[in-house]
Length: 383
Image (tube, rainbow, N blue to C red):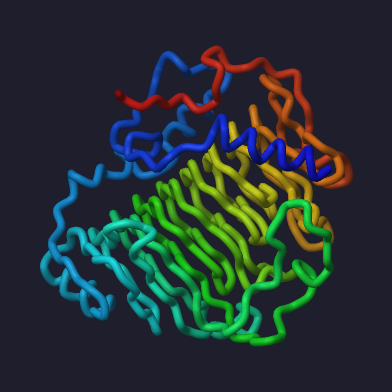
């Protein structure tokens, strides 16, 4: 098994690994390609709308209005930029301490000079939603438009100990990783980026490390792009809604070129529709967790389930707790490997659908034809 999984990892790096590029899908040079549209699948036009309308602006199209160096206060800098009408806040190399929620207003982009040279160190406490205490987020986009987070690292530093997980995909399974609560400190429920009731916002080319709970939580939002981010580890990933890449009550969300590992789920659920996950590298399951509205697309991703992970590559929720998935959730041309079953639902040019009911297989192999353009995502990038 180790040889097989290692081969899968090296193969994916060889054929699909890509350096960050502002000219990839999700950017302002991507466009709807009519020649790829197949009228047999009218939802393709909706999938083409996923992500920021008009794309993430190229870096050279956004003016830097304010530049700061450590140990400058991020909250004060954002408030100053807001008074000046927005623009880019550029962070010079170094670390920036964040001890309370940074609320980013409309038309403000926070950008580092390089994602490996700029680190926001999050030091705060938060509580599980069942305590009825307010949700705690490090970076909050609430009721805003045209907000960007770019080219930086966000790391949770409050605990003096590491999350409970494993380093390698072939390490042994242990119950404590996903099915026992974090009891060393029960106040670590801090969402790293919470996008709520917002539109046309993006997270691009960032490291999101050691989250308290959800690395990214997108709720009641539309036209959000998350692209080229590296997401790794979370402290709280036990049963009970913890530690997700979490898309809920949202539409037209685009996740592309993401690397996601050592969290609980990549989840699309609770009335979400027309979300697209494409060209991602997941070492975590893709989970239609509870009552999505259907018409979501999962295409051309690598999905590898580590031995120590507890789910299949494509998963429904628990029928005793969750609602079934919606109609027309399409899986197409994904490269997968499950720890026990090997490749799952990854035959080339075969159209799969998530089941709309519990009690049978979670994924259905269909006889549907491949779209005439060879893809369900009718988007190209201008050279």
